[in-house]
Length: 205
Length: 205
Ligand SMILES: [Zn+2]
Ligand SMILES: [Zn+2]
Image: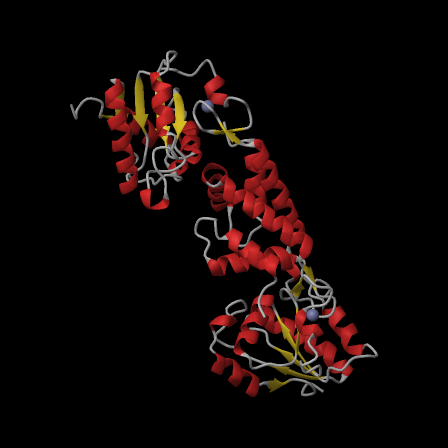
């Protein structure tokens, strides 16, 4: 005896979620099938809908349902400053504060060779291409990454690429806030972090 | 600014999962869409597949992909003893131990009026119908529920119904094990619990 084949497949599939091990996946699968099949259908529909509609903006990689995201199409945004963030959640946190009026570039992760996440997966070559394109208007790049070791390595790697392009590069630090928790930082902390950005651009030269 | 409409719908839908609040749902949704769209497609397929194939056995409510579940169709099982459990996970735990050879009835929950879970949702009227049917062969019902307050109330309620039917009813207690963790109980603990079942059947008369 064990769970049915489709239940086992669902348990396996649920383990792709971060923080969900075998036991949690069993619990979630049984909950969906035993107690909440209608909710499970809604979830299935919502996931399928999001997967077909939500894409990465071709210019900044933020998640969008439009050909180009809202911020990239907003003419009122400062097109000379680009803020690099780890995830859309961090971008949301900064937007909530209202202290940044430039545009963004979303990595969707940090360098993690052991997980097969290199510059390609984070769009770093796309970022370099964007900054070297004929129509580039960006003159300053802000790296608003957290202080985790892998984030530091990622910031270092990006800065190494940008030094070659002679584009001003600075680190914006939110020391107490890990990626994904920036919306807990109050507006003043975010204003201070932008005001105290640390230039990296040419100091390694 | 905020997440896209489909992303927001997905975040809302994910909150149906037990233990997943707004922030976890955001994190899961972004993980699926940002970093793991292929895994998300697999999850979507597995969920859709399970929802269409997995049903509750009409006789015992265990999850099955057959018209009647494996245990209900197994002629070698003792058809005179019925073990009532809170979930398929508990049934799995008991099956692993090999100490019970009767059949099961799965509640998929416990009474919780505040959540709209009454006897109907737990199949308790179905259980009564089953035990009063002309072809009923069950002479003893074992309530293998955990010791949570709501489980005790559920056992009490079921026993009240069964007293009217003059069917022997006993409580099988796994005091250290909450529903869903019975597979951690070793075989000896389960054997002891069955050996030390507490008769409830007529003591309230
Ligand atoms: Zn964009
Ligand atoms: Zn059955």
